[in-house]
Image 1 (spheres, rainbow, N blue to C red):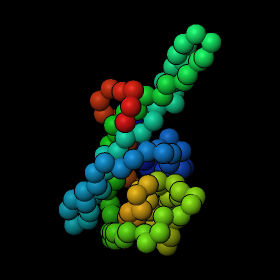
Image 2: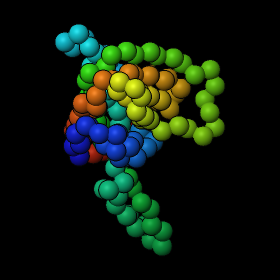
Image 3: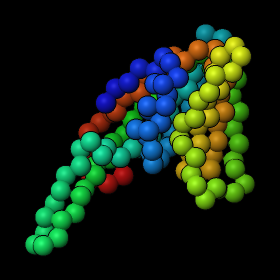
Length: 135
């Protein structure tokens, strides 16, 4: 799967695809006077579900795949560790418009929160590698 990120609905659609994903690595890299986010994660691929029959029982197997998210034009970034993990896990990506650009919040399942201020949405998501049976 590949997805360009240019408008707010692209982030919302990608957030749904990444529901339940784990964050493996995050880097903020200087790029032309701004920052660039490079994030590697592991996500479930429900679109590739297979059904396995064993006698009278059936089991659905969902493969997992590594992915890479890249976002540019970041003006400001902050990182914090949430003291308590909320009972209801927030979405991995949450984006909203603000005067002069966008605010994008990445909240990992382990409670790490990365807040980014972007001038414009400019990025790409792509699966890397082949799907495997377990994360």
